[in-house]
Amino acid sequence: MLELKIPVTEYPSCTPVGYYEVNNTAAIDYKQTKHSVRKQVYGRIKCVDVSSSVNALVNGFAADSSEVIAVVNGDRVVLTSRLENSIGEATNVPWTINLPSTLSMVDASGLRCSSPSGVGCPVDLRYNADSHTVTGTVARLPESGFVEVSFDTSVVLSEGAFKSDKVSVTAPTEGDILPEPSTSNPSSFTFGYNPKVIPLPVKPGVNDSCGVGNAAWVKPADTDQVVWELTDAVHLVAHTTLAHAFQDPKTSDLIRSYDFGVAEETNTEACVVNPPDGNTTPPGGDTKPPVKTPSVPPTVKQPTPKLANTGFTGNSLLGTTAALLVAGIAMTTYRRKNKQTN
Image 1 (tube, rainbow, N blue to C red):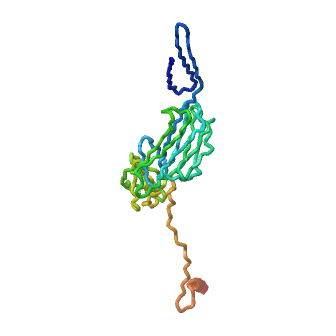
Image 2 (cartoon, one colour):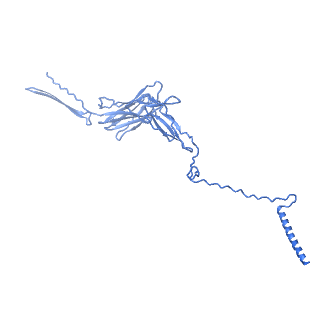
Image 3 (spheres, rainbow, N blue to C red):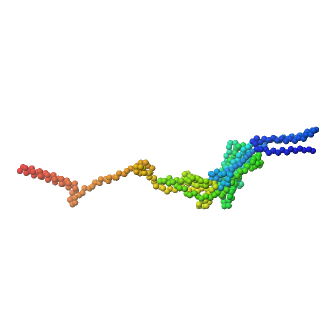
């Protein structure tokens, strides 16, 4: 018995077409006869390339997933996980986001999902409190398609908590051979709980000119450790960058922000402006104040004095005197006439 075996091994690459045809042929030639065997195998190979990613915003700051991100108790962490496919069409992709015990879900009903047209969000997307995971199944993920899920968490640390923790994502997909066959398409994000403690900044200065209600903080420049914010243009708040933290002066806890409050009023006197002509302009006005003229006291009618012990007033005395003068003149005139006659 003569047997001829030809092993054929091929490792197909992941291509958008995904169609392969394999031909195997074996032959034995003799002078008297010829034997040959031919077998052909062909078909389509389902080929996709799904990948996952996860990133975070810590207190509004974008964190670099390639580094260990330092967080402290109470930090607000917004996690966003993304699934995307670069080749073929994936179906029924199971999606799992594993949360560490040091991240607490803020609102289990607050899961947010977004996807472009033609890609649906998982209808079974939910948070599992027992396993502390977010899960869902993507029914269809075409080439160049993606789906994103985001949600809010907060850092909850206790005495003796781990110095580092990890958020991990898996999405094993049938037919996905990249980066290797049977991949679970993992991705992860690592948090560290040991930020560098820096002292509280010195209380900034205040601009406060004359008048009430115009005190304003002198906002310092940002540094690689501290970022300043004026909330509603009133409160001045110092925020640390992700690698740093303050120590609360009252509780000694590590904190990310410190509120210096409202700028303090120190100069409440009214503003006075002296124009070049020397006249004082009242606050808020542009006219000279009226010049006051000294007032003339009113004329008071004086009573007519009375003569002592006579019962006559001054006016009646004058009248009597005038009458006597007239009588005297008349008497003199009479005497002269009488003398001429004689």
